[in-house]
Length: 327
Ligand code: ADP
Ligand code: MG
Image (cartoon, rainbow, N blue to C red; front, side, top):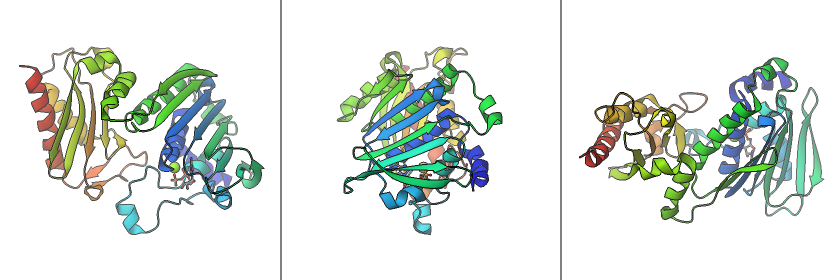
């Protein structure tokens, strides 16, 4: 079992930041509103995620650590309209095959918390009583301790932590109603507070993207039939260092989609000088059935059923916004 899981891990667990992404997405799927991410030594020593989500009942702890045991796919209809972030049921099994993983959880209705550890070659799971408030903690220690080749590929502590920070930023831009605390080696690095209302969204955008982005961006919100595009379009006056401020989301999921990027780039093209770059945070929402999210295993790419229509919509909203401020 461990070997099959390690092979699967090659796909899911590339580096500490990918572990963080999978675990935080699980917390979000569990409805958490507070997520704490504690990192030690760039994640190679420890990645610990503490959430206040719905928890895992004692009898399902073992199942949660086994492959394809996802609780999220019930039938084919579910697959087509899937809204949750993780749905392949591989993350915990894969991570526990390449690290020492401890899962501790307490659902509200359960009096006692329980803890599960996957141990040894056959990954037998031991379940013991534990102390824990409502919610779940996943503690991942010594990542890649048993796969030295993979461990060698890890970059410096600082580089790995930068990747983790980027993952948290991308997620924080999608979940305004969730608070995130990120620590590194015991020091608090980021605290994104829960946004109580839409007015405070801009505050988080400023926290994540920087005040200078916010001060030079225009907010857009446009509906067309069942499409909505909302977000901030940065004026084309940014230097190279801000080139990375390109965030787009489809139905709440971070995307690096060619079609979306192309539409945005085209909208900017006539407004950019040769040393300027686009900077944006954009949220596209549409009917789940209009988009296939399972095109790429890392789930960054999607397939739109009406690509041309969506491309033109994004282009025209962005282009109009840029035209109005460039007058
Ligand atoms: P997937 O997310 O694809 O279902 P995972 O391996 O990531 O697969 O997780 C397996 C299962 O464990 C999930 O389906 C969920 O039921 C449970 N689980 C994992 N993390 C949490 C969490 N933080 N809170 C509640 N349940 C969780
Ligand atoms: Mg998952």
